[in-house]
Length: 448
Ligand code: RM4
Ligand code: MN
Ligand code: MN
Image 1 (cartoon, rainbow, N blue to C red):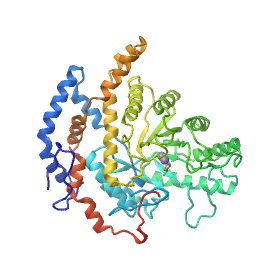
Image 2: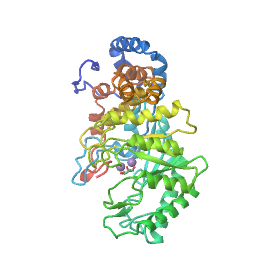
Image 3: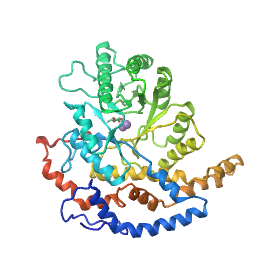
Image 4: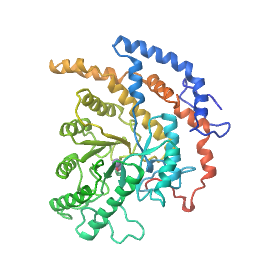
């Protein structure tokens, strides 16, 4: 097995033989080669942080506890509305999707749960699915319902909406689907339902803006009434797409109002890609924390109108600023704040496993950097209106290279010091291509 090299950015990608990247022995053997180099980098960072009054081992412990859920729909190659170019060895069903998720978790140690999307992930036997996940060391996060496309054999069409449709029969069907999702989620051990709908209008006048929202509240209340007492309803807003003029739950205002109307188990979910460019997302986070309504995140990145690029790939500083708000809220001991962390990405040009590993690491990095902010000092600069030193306090944390800290936290958990190199050297993708021949028509997971 080739040794992962932490020194170079270009990786040798030709595996000598196929190995299971989930196996402890394989990961330990890979780590052995990089361990000494890491120990010296970690010691150096530890000495630097000590001068700032920070204990690196305590930090490492907290970083090692960070977790983000994987989107089951993210392990297949995605596409755009123009085309989808399938990747090799894509998972063909939810069981195989979990196998790929387990690779991400084994190598990063940061993704212990999977968020399912129904009916994309529908299967015959959820008991068997849960057992399969358990064997792979995975659990389940929020379940996502899908009333934004029609399924084969479905009685009513969602072409003109689902929970907000003008026809009661369509709303009924959409509510019933969400209740099914709750039932399935209960079998799997999920504790939340994520509610995102594509409902809206393409033309001014097409939809009565007030009545559509009232219908939403009415339908959502029926779903809310079916929630088990230890479940949360996560309401996800999105500015546009598929509706291009007016989306019913288009912003955090509509989402917050709905969550407040429905009751304490209803909370808001922030998908980072669902805002206009340049919107101050960290401020939205701060407001939702204030309202006690921050329920979770769908992490990704975006540059223009896309909502599915890899987390931290475009604007890592913004990601840091989001985590800065969360860590600050924790520091202030805001009660009952435990937002779900989930990735929501689509990978069109990369190996999805590699993108998901990279994104989980970017989130961990942003979290670790947020822990480095000297909060006492920041508060003092804010109170004395020293804008420059206040902003530099954040920058100082953000510009600290925490890579050795992240790698050490992974090593301590039995994950890979260098997940990408370890993954590539395993030959996993090529082995999948062998045992998962593409289905006729080239379909696989992923969103087109
Ligand atoms: C939406 C939204 C939802 C996701 C679907 C596939 O844009 O982000 O969370 O389930 O895409
Ligand atoms: Mn989302
Ligand atoms: Mn989205």
